[in-house]
Length: 269
Length: 269
DNA sequence: GGGACTTTGG
DNA sequence: CCAAAGTCCC
Image (cartoon, rainbow over all chains, first blue to last red; front, side, top):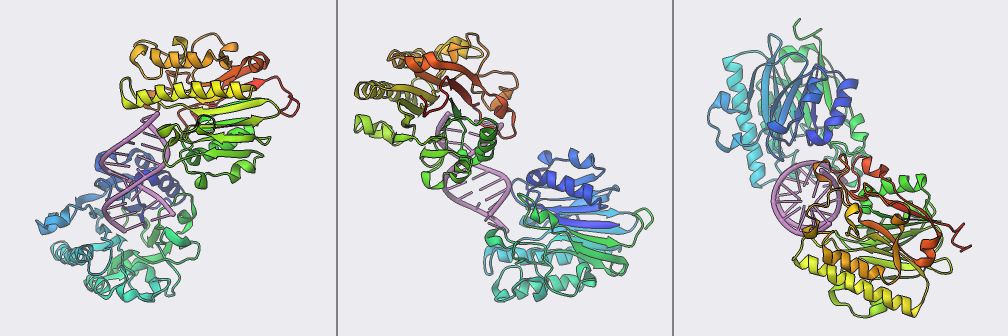
Protein backbone atom coordinates (compact mmCIF):
# COMPACT_ATOMS: atom_id res chain seq x y z
CA UNK A 1 0.00 0.00 0.00
CA UNK A 2 1.05 3.58 -0.62
CA UNK A 3 0.93 6.33 1.96
CA UNK A 4 1.70 9.87 0.86
CA UNK A 5 2.18 13.17 2.67
CA UNK A 6 1.77 16.63 1.14
CA UNK A 7 1.77 20.10 2.60
CA UNK A 8 -0.64 21.71 0.14
CA UNK A 9 -0.52 25.31 1.47
CA UNK A 10 -4.33 25.75 1.34
CA UNK A 11 -6.56 22.89 0.23
CA UNK A 12 -9.03 25.32 -1.33
CA UNK A 13 -6.40 26.94 -3.51
CA UNK A 14 -4.81 23.59 -4.35
CA UNK A 15 -7.95 21.45 -4.72
CA UNK A 16 -7.66 20.91 -8.46
CA UNK A 17 -4.00 20.00 -8.22
CA UNK A 18 -4.69 17.55 -5.41
CA UNK A 19 -7.53 15.89 -7.35
CA UNK A 20 -5.46 15.58 -10.48
CA UNK A 21 -2.51 14.26 -8.52
CA UNK A 22 -4.69 11.62 -6.86
CA UNK A 23 -6.03 10.49 -10.22
CA UNK A 24 -2.49 10.08 -11.52
CA UNK A 25 -1.27 8.68 -8.18
CA UNK A 26 -4.10 6.67 -6.62
CA UNK A 27 -2.38 6.21 -3.25
CA UNK A 28 -4.19 4.41 -0.45
CA UNK A 29 -3.65 7.22 2.04
CA UNK A 30 -2.82 10.89 1.59
CA UNK A 31 -1.96 13.01 4.61
CA UNK A 32 -2.39 16.75 4.04
CA UNK A 33 -0.98 19.68 6.00
CA UNK A 34 -1.67 23.41 5.96
CA UNK A 35 -5.22 22.96 4.75
CA UNK A 36 -5.91 26.47 6.13
CA UNK A 37 -9.66 26.08 6.39
CA UNK A 38 -12.28 25.41 9.05
CA UNK A 39 -13.94 22.02 8.82
CA UNK A 40 -17.27 23.42 7.57
CA UNK A 41 -15.57 24.89 4.51
CA UNK A 42 -13.25 21.97 3.70
CA UNK A 43 -14.05 20.82 0.12
CA UNK A 44 -14.82 17.19 0.89
CA UNK A 45 -17.03 16.25 -2.06
CA UNK A 46 -14.40 16.29 -4.85
CA UNK A 47 -12.24 13.97 -2.73
CA UNK A 48 -15.01 11.57 -1.73
CA UNK A 49 -15.95 11.46 -5.42
CA UNK A 50 -12.45 10.16 -6.09
CA UNK A 51 -13.07 7.31 -3.66
CA UNK A 52 -11.53 8.68 -0.47
CA UNK A 53 -12.83 8.86 3.07
CA UNK A 54 -11.98 12.30 4.42
CA UNK A 55 -10.97 13.08 8.02
CA UNK A 56 -10.16 16.67 8.89
CA UNK A 57 -9.01 18.95 11.66
CA UNK A 58 -8.80 22.51 10.49
CA UNK A 59 -8.90 26.12 11.56
CA UNK A 60 -9.21 29.49 9.91
CA UNK A 61 -6.23 30.80 7.89
CA UNK A 62 -3.46 28.73 9.48
CA UNK A 63 -2.41 25.11 10.00
CA UNK A 64 -4.97 22.35 9.52
CA UNK A 65 -4.42 18.64 8.75
CA UNK A 66 -6.43 15.96 6.96
CA UNK A 67 -6.27 12.26 6.20
CA UNK A 68 -7.69 10.92 2.95
CA UNK A 69 -8.00 7.13 2.83
CA UNK A 70 -9.46 4.62 0.39
CA UNK A 71 -10.34 2.37 3.35
CA UNK A 72 -12.25 3.74 6.33
CA UNK A 73 -10.02 4.94 9.15
CA UNK A 74 -11.03 3.92 12.67
CA UNK A 75 -10.38 5.54 16.04
CA UNK A 76 -9.84 8.95 14.48
CA UNK A 77 -8.67 11.53 16.99
CA UNK A 78 -7.17 14.99 16.74
CA UNK A 79 -4.60 16.82 18.82
CA UNK A 80 -2.77 15.66 21.91
CA UNK A 81 -5.56 15.88 24.45
CA UNK A 82 -7.31 12.55 23.75
CA UNK A 83 -4.13 10.89 25.03
CA UNK A 84 -2.52 13.50 27.28
CA UNK A 85 -5.50 15.41 28.63
CA UNK A 86 -5.24 19.18 28.90
CA UNK A 87 -2.23 20.53 27.01
CA UNK A 88 -3.23 24.19 27.15
CA UNK A 89 -2.48 26.30 24.12
CA UNK A 90 -0.90 23.37 22.24
CA UNK A 91 -4.43 22.36 21.36
CA UNK A 92 -5.61 25.60 19.72
CA UNK A 93 -3.50 25.05 16.61
CA UNK A 94 -4.73 22.16 14.48
CA UNK A 95 -1.59 20.17 13.79
CA UNK A 96 -2.27 16.48 14.46
CA UNK A 97 -4.78 13.89 13.31
CA UNK A 98 -4.46 10.15 13.75
CA UNK A 99 -6.38 6.94 13.24
CA UNK A 100 -6.06 3.21 12.67
CA UNK A 101 -5.89 1.82 9.14
CA UNK A 102 -6.41 -1.90 8.68
CA UNK A 103 -6.12 -4.13 11.73
CA UNK A 104 -2.86 -2.86 13.13
CA UNK A 105 -1.41 0.34 11.70
CA UNK A 106 -1.70 3.77 13.27
CA UNK A 107 -1.15 6.71 10.95
CA UNK A 108 -0.23 9.97 12.69
CA UNK A 109 -0.35 13.01 10.44
CA UNK A 110 1.54 16.00 11.84
CA UNK A 111 2.19 19.58 10.88
CA UNK A 112 5.04 20.48 13.19
CA UNK A 113 5.39 24.23 13.88
CA UNK A 114 7.80 26.12 11.66
CA UNK A 115 9.47 27.91 14.55
CA UNK A 116 10.25 31.15 12.72
CA UNK A 117 13.77 31.79 14.07
CA UNK A 118 16.00 30.69 16.96
CA UNK A 119 15.22 32.37 20.23
CA UNK A 120 11.73 33.51 19.29
CA UNK A 121 8.50 32.58 21.08
CA UNK A 122 7.59 30.48 18.03
CA UNK A 123 10.87 28.60 18.29
CA UNK A 124 10.19 27.66 21.89
CA UNK A 125 6.65 26.69 20.94
CA UNK A 126 8.08 24.35 18.29
CA UNK A 127 10.41 22.66 20.81
CA UNK A 128 7.58 22.38 23.33
CA UNK A 129 5.35 20.87 20.64
CA UNK A 130 8.05 18.31 19.75
CA UNK A 131 8.56 17.39 23.39
CA UNK A 132 4.80 16.95 23.77
CA UNK A 133 4.71 14.80 20.64
CA UNK A 134 7.39 12.61 22.23
CA UNK A 135 5.33 12.17 25.38
CA UNK A 136 2.22 11.54 23.30
CA UNK A 137 3.92 8.82 21.21
CA UNK A 138 5.46 7.15 24.26
CA UNK A 139 2.05 7.03 25.90
CA UNK A 140 0.41 5.67 22.75
CA UNK A 141 3.03 2.93 22.45
CA UNK A 142 2.55 1.93 26.07
CA UNK A 143 -1.24 1.93 26.01
CA UNK A 144 -1.90 0.28 22.64
CA UNK A 145 1.10 -1.22 20.92
CA UNK A 146 0.60 -1.14 17.15
CA UNK A 147 2.79 -0.42 14.19
CA UNK A 148 2.88 3.32 13.62
CA UNK A 149 3.71 5.69 10.85
CA UNK A 150 4.22 9.36 11.63
CA UNK A 151 4.11 11.40 8.48
CA UNK A 152 3.76 15.03 7.60
CA UNK A 153 5.60 18.32 7.44
CA UNK A 154 8.16 18.12 10.24
CA UNK A 155 9.80 21.47 9.44
CA UNK A 156 13.10 19.77 10.33
CA UNK A 157 15.89 18.61 8.03
CA UNK A 158 17.27 15.64 10.00
CA UNK A 159 20.77 15.71 8.52
CA UNK A 160 23.03 18.06 6.61
CA UNK A 161 22.45 16.00 3.45
CA UNK A 162 18.81 17.06 3.68
CA UNK A 163 19.73 20.70 2.94
CA UNK A 164 21.00 22.06 -0.39
CA UNK A 165 23.50 24.23 1.47
CA UNK A 166 24.14 23.34 5.11
CA UNK A 167 26.35 26.41 5.66
CA UNK A 168 25.13 28.21 8.76
CA UNK A 169 22.58 25.54 9.50
CA UNK A 170 23.30 25.70 13.27
CA UNK A 171 21.34 28.94 13.50
CA UNK A 172 18.89 28.36 10.67
CA UNK A 173 15.34 27.32 11.50
CA UNK A 174 14.61 23.71 10.54
CA UNK A 175 18.23 22.66 11.09
CA UNK A 176 19.32 23.81 14.57
CA UNK A 177 20.67 21.26 17.01
CA UNK A 178 17.77 21.56 19.49
CA UNK A 179 15.30 20.79 16.71
CA UNK A 180 17.30 17.83 15.45
CA UNK A 181 17.78 16.54 18.98
CA UNK A 182 14.05 16.74 19.64
CA UNK A 183 13.41 14.75 16.47
CA UNK A 184 16.15 12.24 17.34
CA UNK A 185 14.55 11.73 20.73
CA UNK A 186 11.26 10.90 19.02
CA UNK A 187 13.02 8.54 16.61
CA UNK A 188 14.68 6.86 19.61
CA UNK A 189 11.23 5.64 20.62
CA UNK A 190 11.60 3.24 17.71
CA UNK A 191 10.98 5.18 14.50
CA UNK A 192 13.10 5.27 11.35
CA UNK A 193 13.11 7.64 8.39
CA UNK A 194 11.47 5.75 5.50
CA UNK A 195 13.10 7.82 2.76
CA UNK A 196 16.62 7.06 3.98
CA UNK A 197 16.05 3.29 3.76
CA UNK A 198 16.41 3.64 -0.01
CA UNK A 199 18.25 6.86 -0.77
CA UNK A 200 21.50 7.65 1.04
CA UNK A 201 22.70 10.57 -1.04
CA UNK A 202 21.97 14.29 -0.87
CA UNK A 203 20.10 16.36 -3.47
CA UNK A 204 16.58 15.10 -2.68
CA UNK A 205 14.27 17.73 -1.22
CA UNK A 206 10.57 18.10 -0.45
CA UNK A 207 10.33 21.87 0.05
CA UNK A 208 11.69 24.81 -1.92
CA UNK A 209 11.16 28.43 -0.88
CA UNK A 210 8.86 30.34 -3.20
CA UNK A 211 11.41 33.12 -3.36
CA UNK A 212 14.51 33.59 -5.50
CA UNK A 213 13.88 30.69 -7.88
CA UNK A 214 14.81 28.12 -5.25
CA UNK A 215 13.06 25.29 -7.07
CA UNK A 216 14.63 26.10 -10.42
CA UNK A 217 18.06 25.79 -8.80
CA UNK A 218 17.03 22.80 -6.61
CA UNK A 219 17.90 24.81 -3.54
CA UNK A 220 15.60 22.83 -1.29
CA UNK A 221 15.17 21.14 2.05
CA UNK A 222 13.92 17.66 2.91
CA UNK A 223 11.49 18.39 5.75
CA UNK A 224 8.50 16.15 4.89
CA UNK A 225 8.93 12.67 6.27
CA UNK A 226 7.59 9.24 7.06
CA UNK A 227 8.85 7.87 10.37
CA UNK A 228 8.08 4.16 10.75
CA UNK A 229 8.13 1.62 13.55
CA UNK A 230 10.38 -1.38 12.94
CA UNK A 231 7.78 -3.73 11.53
CA UNK A 232 6.65 -1.21 8.90
CA UNK A 233 10.19 -0.07 8.18
CA UNK A 234 11.13 -3.66 7.42
CA UNK A 235 8.25 -3.92 4.97
CA UNK A 236 8.87 -0.56 3.25
CA UNK A 237 9.38 -1.09 -0.49
CA UNK A 238 10.33 2.39 -1.58
CA UNK A 239 9.92 6.08 -0.84
CA UNK A 240 10.00 8.82 -3.45
CA UNK A 241 9.46 12.55 -3.67
CA UNK A 242 7.25 13.59 -6.59
CA UNK A 243 8.48 17.01 -7.61
CA UNK A 244 6.13 17.21 -10.61
CA UNK A 245 3.43 19.24 -8.78
CA UNK A 246 6.05 21.78 -7.74
CA UNK A 247 6.50 22.59 -11.46
CA UNK A 248 2.86 23.53 -12.04
CA UNK A 249 1.40 27.04 -12.13
CA UNK A 250 0.58 28.23 -8.60
CA UNK A 251 2.16 25.27 -6.85
CA UNK A 252 2.44 24.49 -3.17
CA UNK A 253 5.99 25.12 -1.97
CA UNK A 254 6.09 21.44 -0.88
CA UNK A 255 6.13 18.29 -3.02
CA UNK A 256 4.28 15.11 -2.06
CA UNK A 257 6.32 12.22 -0.67
CA UNK A 258 5.06 8.65 -1.27
CA UNK A 259 6.01 5.64 0.81
CA UNK A 260 5.15 2.13 -0.34
CA UNK A 261 4.77 -0.68 2.14
CA UNK A 262 4.72 -4.32 1.07
CA UNK A 263 1.14 -5.00 1.94
CA UNK A 264 -1.15 -5.99 -0.89
CA UNK A 265 -3.89 -3.97 0.77
CA UNK A 266 -4.89 -2.70 4.15
CA UNK A 267 -7.38 -5.47 4.77
CA UNK A 268 -4.84 -8.18 4.00
CA UNK A 269 -2.32 -6.74 6.44
CA UNK B 1 -12.49 51.40 -38.35
CA UNK B 2 -13.44 49.88 -35.01
CA UNK B 3 -13.14 51.65 -31.70
CA UNK B 4 -13.86 49.67 -28.54
CA UNK B 5 -14.17 50.55 -24.86
CA UNK B 6 -13.72 48.15 -21.96
CA UNK B 7 -13.54 48.64 -18.22
CA UNK B 8 -11.20 45.75 -17.42
CA UNK B 9 -11.14 46.10 -13.61
CA UNK B 10 -7.34 45.74 -13.35
CA UNK B 11 -5.25 45.34 -16.47
CA UNK B 12 -2.76 43.12 -14.65
CA UNK B 13 -5.44 40.66 -13.56
CA UNK B 14 -7.16 40.78 -16.96
CA UNK B 15 -4.10 40.92 -19.23
CA UNK B 16 -4.55 37.46 -20.74
CA UNK B 17 -8.23 38.06 -21.41
CA UNK B 18 -7.50 41.40 -23.06
CA UNK B 19 -4.79 39.89 -25.28
CA UNK B 20 -7.00 37.01 -26.33
CA UNK B 21 -9.90 39.34 -26.96
CA UNK B 22 -7.74 41.58 -29.16
CA UNK B 23 -6.56 38.59 -31.19
CA UNK B 24 -10.17 37.57 -31.78
CA UNK B 25 -11.30 41.20 -32.20
CA UNK B 26 -8.47 43.14 -33.84
CA UNK B 27 -10.05 46.55 -33.32
CA UNK B 28 -8.19 49.67 -34.37
CA UNK B 29 -8.55 51.35 -30.99
CA UNK B 30 -9.27 49.97 -27.54
CA UNK B 31 -9.97 52.33 -24.66
CA UNK B 32 -9.44 50.78 -21.23
CA UNK B 33 -10.70 51.93 -17.84
CA UNK B 34 -9.89 50.88 -14.28
CA UNK B 35 -6.41 49.72 -15.16
CA UNK B 36 -5.54 50.08 -11.43
CA UNK B 37 -1.82 50.34 -11.88
CA UNK B 38 0.89 52.98 -11.92
CA UNK B 39 2.44 53.62 -15.32
CA UNK B 40 5.76 51.95 -14.43
CA UNK B 41 3.99 48.65 -13.76
CA UNK B 42 1.56 48.72 -16.69
CA UNK B 43 2.17 45.55 -18.78
CA UNK B 44 2.86 47.24 -22.11
CA UNK B 45 4.93 44.58 -23.89
CA UNK B 46 2.20 41.97 -24.48
CA UNK B 47 0.05 44.69 -26.08
CA UNK B 48 2.78 46.20 -28.24
CA UNK B 49 3.57 42.65 -29.34
CA UNK B 50 0.01 42.46 -30.65
CA UNK B 51 0.64 45.54 -32.78
CA UNK B 52 -0.74 48.30 -30.55
CA UNK B 53 0.71 51.61 -29.49
CA UNK B 54 0.02 52.02 -25.78
CA UNK B 55 -0.82 55.32 -24.05
CA UNK B 56 -1.49 55.23 -20.32
CA UNK B 57 -2.46 57.33 -17.34
CA UNK B 58 -2.62 55.26 -14.20
CA UNK B 59 -2.37 55.31 -10.44
CA UNK B 60 -2.04 52.79 -7.66
CA UNK B 61 -5.07 50.62 -6.80
CA UNK B 62 -7.83 52.79 -8.29
CA UNK B 63 -8.96 54.30 -11.59
CA UNK B 64 -6.48 54.49 -14.47
CA UNK B 65 -7.16 54.74 -18.23
CA UNK B 66 -5.30 53.68 -21.36
CA UNK B 67 -5.61 53.94 -25.13
CA UNK B 68 -4.37 51.11 -27.33
CA UNK B 69 -4.16 51.99 -31.03
CA UNK B 70 -2.86 50.26 -34.15
CA UNK B 71 -1.94 53.67 -35.58
CA UNK B 72 0.12 56.11 -33.54
CA UNK B 73 -1.97 58.60 -31.55
CA UNK B 74 -0.85 62.22 -31.64
CA UNK B 75 -1.31 65.06 -29.17
CA UNK B 76 -1.82 62.67 -26.26
CA UNK B 77 -2.81 64.42 -23.06
CA UNK B 78 -4.23 63.33 -19.73
CA UNK B 79 -6.65 64.93 -17.32
CA UNK B 80 -8.41 68.27 -17.57
CA UNK B 81 -5.50 70.56 -16.78
CA UNK B 82 -3.87 70.72 -20.26
CA UNK B 83 -7.05 72.48 -21.40
CA UNK B 84 -8.49 74.01 -18.22
CA UNK B 85 -5.41 74.72 -16.13
CA UNK B 86 -5.53 74.00 -12.41
CA UNK B 87 -8.58 71.92 -11.50
CA UNK B 88 -7.47 71.04 -7.98
CA UNK B 89 -8.30 67.58 -6.71
CA UNK B 90 -10.02 66.60 -9.96
CA UNK B 91 -6.56 65.91 -11.32
CA UNK B 92 -5.36 63.45 -8.68
CA UNK B 93 -7.60 60.66 -9.95
CA UNK B 94 -6.54 59.32 -13.34
CA UNK B 95 -9.76 59.28 -15.32
CA UNK B 96 -9.17 60.89 -18.72
CA UNK B 97 -6.79 60.39 -21.61
CA UNK B 98 -7.19 61.81 -25.09
CA UNK B 99 -5.39 62.11 -28.40
CA UNK B 100 -5.83 62.56 -32.14
CA UNK B 101 -6.19 59.55 -34.41
CA UNK B 102 -5.79 60.07 -38.13
CA UNK B 103 -6.03 63.61 -39.47
CA UNK B 104 -9.19 64.72 -37.74
CA UNK B 105 -10.59 62.52 -34.97
CA UNK B 106 -10.14 63.12 -31.27
CA UNK B 107 -10.71 60.14 -29.01
CA UNK B 108 -11.46 60.98 -25.39
CA UNK B 109 -11.34 58.00 -23.06
CA UNK B 110 -13.08 58.62 -19.73
CA UNK B 111 -13.66 56.77 -16.51
CA UNK B 112 -16.40 58.84 -14.92
CA UNK B 113 -16.61 58.52 -11.11
CA UNK B 114 -19.06 55.97 -9.78
CA UNK B 115 -20.56 58.32 -7.20
CA UNK B 116 -21.32 55.70 -4.56
CA UNK B 117 -24.77 56.96 -3.46
CA UNK B 118 -26.90 60.08 -3.65
CA UNK B 119 -25.94 62.75 -1.18
CA UNK B 120 -22.45 61.46 -0.47
CA UNK B 121 -19.20 63.33 -1.04
CA UNK B 122 -18.48 60.92 -3.89
CA UNK B 123 -21.80 61.77 -5.51
CA UNK B 124 -21.00 65.47 -5.49
CA UNK B 125 -17.53 64.72 -6.81
CA UNK B 126 -19.13 62.84 -9.72
CA UNK B 127 -21.39 65.77 -10.58
CA UNK B 128 -18.48 68.19 -10.30
CA UNK B 129 -16.41 65.94 -12.56
CA UNK B 130 -19.21 65.84 -15.15
CA UNK B 131 -19.60 69.62 -15.05
CA UNK B 132 -15.85 69.96 -15.53
CA UNK B 133 -15.95 67.52 -18.43
CA UNK B 134 -18.63 69.71 -20.02
CA UNK B 135 -16.44 72.79 -19.69
CA UNK B 136 -13.44 70.84 -20.99
CA UNK B 137 -15.30 69.62 -24.08
CA UNK B 138 -16.77 73.05 -24.84
CA UNK B 139 -13.31 74.55 -24.66
CA UNK B 140 -11.85 71.83 -26.86
CA UNK B 141 -14.54 72.35 -29.48
CA UNK B 142 -13.96 76.08 -29.49
CA UNK B 143 -10.18 75.88 -29.66
CA UNK B 144 -9.69 73.07 -32.17
CA UNK B 145 -12.80 71.90 -33.95
CA UNK B 146 -12.44 68.24 -34.89
CA UNK B 147 -14.73 65.27 -34.89
CA UNK B 148 -14.72 63.73 -31.42
CA UNK B 149 -15.59 60.46 -29.84
CA UNK B 150 -15.97 60.25 -26.08
CA UNK B 151 -15.93 56.67 -24.94
CA UNK B 152 -15.51 54.86 -21.69
CA UNK B 153 -17.24 53.89 -18.49
CA UNK B 154 -19.71 56.72 -17.85
CA UNK B 155 -21.27 55.12 -14.77
CA UNK B 156 -24.58 56.52 -16.03
CA UNK B 157 -27.48 54.71 -17.64
CA UNK B 158 -28.88 57.44 -19.93
CA UNK B 159 -32.43 56.10 -20.13
CA UNK B 160 -34.70 53.71 -18.29
CA UNK B 161 -34.31 51.18 -21.11
CA UNK B 162 -30.63 51.01 -20.17
CA UNK B 163 -31.47 49.36 -16.82
CA UNK B 164 -32.81 45.84 -16.34
CA UNK B 165 -35.18 47.12 -13.65
CA UNK B 166 -35.71 50.89 -13.54
CA UNK B 167 -37.80 50.66 -10.35
CA UNK B 168 -36.40 53.12 -7.84
CA UNK B 169 -33.92 54.48 -10.33
CA UNK B 170 -34.48 58.10 -9.14
CA UNK B 171 -32.43 57.39 -6.04
CA UNK B 172 -30.10 54.74 -7.44
CA UNK B 173 -26.55 55.74 -8.36
CA UNK B 174 -25.97 55.71 -12.12
CA UNK B 175 -29.59 56.66 -12.83
CA UNK B 176 -30.51 59.73 -10.77
CA UNK B 177 -31.84 62.81 -12.53
CA UNK B 178 -28.84 65.03 -11.71
CA UNK B 179 -26.48 62.46 -13.27
CA UNK B 180 -28.64 62.10 -16.39
CA UNK B 181 -29.00 65.86 -16.68
CA UNK B 182 -25.24 66.33 -16.46
CA UNK B 183 -24.80 63.78 -19.24
CA UNK B 184 -27.57 65.38 -21.33
CA UNK B 185 -25.86 68.74 -20.99
CA UNK B 186 -22.68 67.20 -22.37
CA UNK B 187 -24.60 65.56 -25.22
CA UNK B 188 -26.18 68.94 -25.97
CA UNK B 189 -22.73 70.13 -27.01
CA UNK B 190 -23.29 67.97 -30.08
CA UNK B 191 -22.74 64.35 -29.09
CA UNK B 192 -24.97 61.35 -29.76
CA UNK B 193 -25.02 57.87 -28.24
CA UNK B 194 -23.55 55.52 -30.88
CA UNK B 195 -25.24 52.40 -29.56
CA UNK B 196 -28.72 53.90 -29.83
CA UNK B 197 -28.28 54.65 -33.53
CA UNK B 198 -28.77 50.94 -34.16
CA UNK B 199 -30.54 49.41 -31.20
CA UNK B 200 -33.70 51.03 -29.84
CA UNK B 201 -34.88 48.30 -27.52
CA UNK B 202 -34.05 47.44 -23.92
CA UNK B 203 -32.23 44.34 -22.69
CA UNK B 204 -28.72 45.33 -23.83
CA UNK B 205 -26.26 45.97 -21.01
CA UNK B 206 -22.53 46.49 -20.61
CA UNK B 207 -22.16 45.98 -16.84
CA UNK B 208 -23.49 43.33 -14.49
CA UNK B 209 -22.81 43.31 -10.74
CA UNK B 210 -20.54 40.47 -9.66
CA UNK B 211 -23.02 39.62 -6.92
CA UNK B 212 -26.19 37.55 -6.91
CA UNK B 213 -25.77 36.05 -10.37
CA UNK B 214 -26.66 39.32 -12.08
CA UNK B 215 -25.07 38.29 -15.36
CA UNK B 216 -26.74 34.87 -15.42
CA UNK B 217 -30.10 36.63 -15.12
CA UNK B 218 -29.08 39.50 -17.46
CA UNK B 219 -29.77 41.96 -14.66
CA UNK B 220 -27.44 44.58 -16.05
CA UNK B 221 -26.93 48.24 -16.81
CA UNK B 222 -25.74 49.97 -19.98
CA UNK B 223 -23.19 52.43 -18.64
CA UNK B 224 -20.30 52.10 -21.14
CA UNK B 225 -20.80 54.37 -24.11
CA UNK B 226 -19.52 55.99 -27.28
CA UNK B 227 -20.69 59.59 -27.67
CA UNK B 228 -20.01 60.92 -31.17
CA UNK B 229 -20.03 64.27 -32.87
CA UNK B 230 -22.39 64.57 -35.84
CA UNK B 231 -19.90 63.72 -38.57
CA UNK B 232 -18.82 60.51 -36.89
CA UNK B 233 -22.35 59.64 -35.84
CA UNK B 234 -23.43 59.86 -39.47
CA UNK B 235 -20.66 57.49 -40.48
CA UNK B 236 -21.25 54.97 -37.66
CA UNK B 237 -21.91 51.51 -39.14
CA UNK B 238 -22.80 49.56 -36.05
CA UNK B 239 -22.26 49.30 -32.32
CA UNK B 240 -22.35 46.06 -30.36
CA UNK B 241 -21.72 44.83 -26.85
CA UNK B 242 -19.60 41.68 -26.72
CA UNK B 243 -20.77 39.83 -23.64
CA UNK B 244 -18.53 36.81 -24.32
CA UNK B 245 -15.69 37.95 -21.99
CA UNK B 246 -18.20 38.37 -19.17
CA UNK B 247 -18.78 34.58 -19.35
CA UNK B 248 -15.14 33.65 -18.75
CA UNK B 249 -13.59 32.60 -15.47
CA UNK B 250 -12.61 35.63 -13.40
CA UNK B 251 -14.17 38.18 -15.73
CA UNK B 252 -14.32 41.93 -15.51
CA UNK B 253 -17.78 43.03 -14.43
CA UNK B 254 -17.96 45.07 -17.68
CA UNK B 255 -18.19 43.85 -21.27
CA UNK B 256 -16.40 45.54 -24.17
CA UNK B 257 -18.47 47.72 -26.51
CA UNK B 258 -17.35 48.04 -30.13
CA UNK B 259 -18.30 50.87 -32.46
CA UNK B 260 -17.59 50.66 -36.17
CA UNK B 261 -17.20 53.79 -38.25
CA UNK B 262 -17.32 53.71 -42.03
CA UNK B 263 -13.73 54.60 -42.62
CA UNK B 264 -11.56 52.09 -44.42
CA UNK B 265 -8.69 53.07 -42.17
CA UNK B 266 -7.53 55.95 -40.08
CA UNK B 267 -5.11 57.24 -42.68
CA UNK B 268 -7.79 57.27 -45.36
CA UNK B 269 -10.17 59.26 -43.18
C1' DG C 1 -18.24 39.07 -5.79
C1' DG C 2 -13.99 40.69 -7.15
C1' DG C 3 -9.62 43.50 -7.00
C1' DA C 4 -5.95 46.00 -4.59
C1' DC C 5 -4.08 47.01 -0.20
C1' DT C 6 -1.77 45.94 4.33
C1' DT C 7 -0.51 42.82 7.92
C1' DT C 8 0.70 38.27 9.49
C1' DG C 9 2.63 33.94 8.68
C1' DG C 10 5.48 30.76 6.02
C1' DC D 1 7.17 34.45 -3.38
C1' DC D 2 2.51 32.86 -1.80
C1' DA D 3 -1.96 32.62 1.14
C1' DA D 4 -5.41 34.49 4.17
C1' DA D 5 -7.58 38.34 6.79
C1' DG D 6 -9.46 42.85 7.02
C1' DT D 7 -10.42 47.25 4.72
C1' DC D 8 -11.91 50.11 0.84
C1' DC D 9 -14.15 50.64 -3.53
C1' DC D 10 -17.17 49.52 -7.12
